[in-house]
Length: 140
Ligand code: T46
View 1 (cartoon, rainbow, N blue to C red):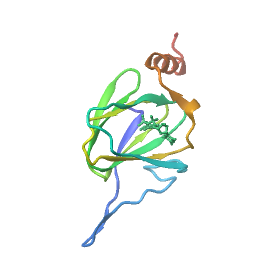
View 2: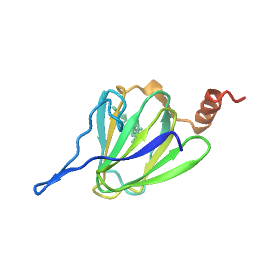
View 3: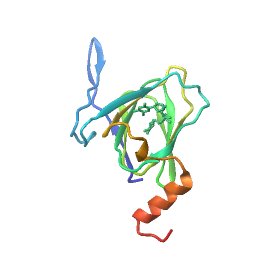
View 4: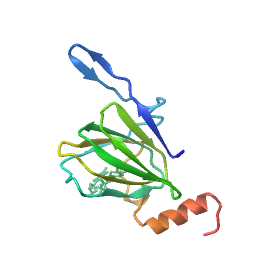
């Protein structure tokens, strides 16, 4: 799917442990970082997300534990298991996302290209599909 990339982040490790840094305007984070938030204490079987963003890029990293990240471009759906802090998903605009199967210790960190804006969210899957079709120039 072209709407996201899986990235192996560089680990700076030595005998004291490991460190990963994320910077703006890099190959893996091609935007200015304007917001960071993290999701934790989520019950295993809940489903979070269930929306798309019209104009927001995000880099998602599971910095502790594991969870499933589901990405949907309106045609196909992929489930990505996030289970290491060295793997990131770069999610582009107009991607439907859902997160589930959270482990007890799961901490999902999200680095975003813009400030929090509720107007950017599409919460209705039917509306999401209509907007995807419009963007492709298809009849809705
Ligand atoms: C996304 C996925 C991966 C804020 O006040 N500021 C913020 O920056 C965010 C992201 C949320 N909130 C408030 C709004 C809600 O009252 O925090 C509460 C939970 O947010 P939400 O229900 O949107 O959480 P998720 O886990 O469903 O979705 C979040 C992001 O909102 C979304 O952009 O891509 O994580």
